Length: 409
Picture (cartoon, rainbow, N blue to C red):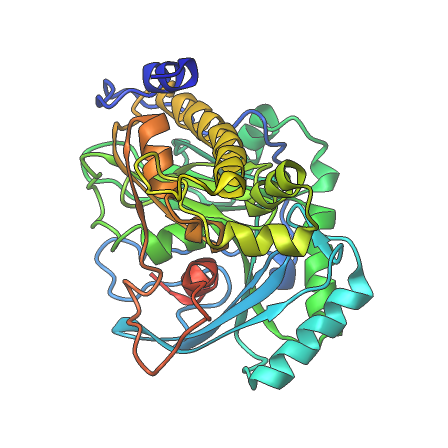
């Protein structure tokens, strides 16, 4: 094995760690805190208080039909989910975005994006109400910590804000915060804290308003990803035997989410996307971006993939793609290693990958070989069904986050 393989396998442990309560999160993502008006509040899924039947969300309670809207750098994706018992997908659509309208999970051209969203909803005949938007960039993040021992709701909120002040290195006037109390049966309750820069949230909210889209809430993409491909949530007080790891590979960024089966304990957004593989092929073969993307879709980059021995261009393209995937594997392993450095973290049994970038043939096999953990391509329809003739042109993984945004657990 190569040096990079040895390094990655050495850094990621499969064993469950000793149980000690502490924080989990990514120090490389700036995270922030402050309450905001309901229309722009981050929307965290809530579980019901003990011995109550119904669940609720900060965005105003359980909704029967929700439109999940995912905004990427290369496309919009929407999923209409009916939450009546088991969630059901009733409609899905995708729409290509022009370059430089969105980059790195943030709005770059407000007017152009508003026009694209409006045109998308009209062309696809999507409901404009009860829309939940997902956000995910290096300026969003998650923390999990033990619940302060305070009973009064106002004092509890103040205690959580104070804890956020201590934890998050950002001026509070630049931040938005939402939190959820995770009830436990055999251990102290925990706080799930979600944070994002205020200008990031406000810009997306204003864009949707300009497109005449009524937002139900704004959610962290990592939470939606886990709802879509992370399996059914466990009952209160339970944790999975091994962490559930979901990875969404997009055009210019990759979202990593780690769950204990109930809550997202760790998330990180990597500056890596499928466009890197396209650019590597473009350089290696000296072709334009369109031709490089076409070639990428024909490749199989797994180590045991049969290649035409006389096809030198294919060999060069595969080698270029593999070099770029090595970079993703290294960043993924580093993120998982950071999670496992946290007390009370879980071991890993499997990584599920999705997103448009996950459709690169052989990617799962290559990542598994490099990271040393089983990797499979997730079924984005696993929790909602894939009937009704819904298809996204062979890029179903790009619907995963949108589907998760529509699910109400």
